[in-house]
Image (cartoon, rainbow, N blue to C red; front, side, top):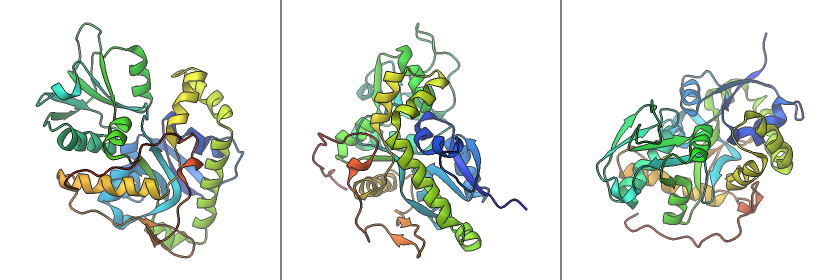
Length: 310
């Protein structure tokens, strides 16, 4: 009988600091790893095919009754993220009610763009899900396109669009809080059915994250094999990413959920139920570590600001 736990893995470079130590054998683990896009992993997790997985942060909000959040683990940014980009042929303020093509691969990025469009930029574009067939430099393809992950890194490098809005930057400039793009979750049923094995599994994930963030040069060397970015570009990319889930990340996440509710994308704002071996705890019950514990520096953080009406 196979006693491995099913662990989801996003198929992008942004998770390499968490997964390379597991997949290379540096950190021992009890997992069978299943790779896919964020949207695909959301689907697998919701139907119970994964025991632990990264999911889009909006997936947790929509199905919070199914999951506990893995402590101290996320994909976040304090500003620029580089891999969630609105690529446009005109400034974002001029998009108005025009069509924006959005990726089907990530629900959170689409939700963030809807929040920013309506609440920050006060526009009401038409969102159409799909993949552009033509990105010619002579005006082919969509007026604007939301790209994520490795695709965003590639397209931005080609400089085909004159206007690029980094959604991590746009959120941080507006709120003064980090944005949490993805969380790792444990299915509540897995805790009930396999609880004796979940604490060691969570520990393996956190040990792997710590190793990856401590040896980022090795991570960049491995990431360079994908041919998406050069080594120096990868160092810059990973400096933008955070992999912790501390107090400020949780506050940013709760604010995002509140915004989603205001624009009609959520029926309710969920509580953040954090997994611990002794039982779940609700966000805010404990002290979070400082944001500097991520892979990059957080020097120069702007002061937190409030959003009118929130």
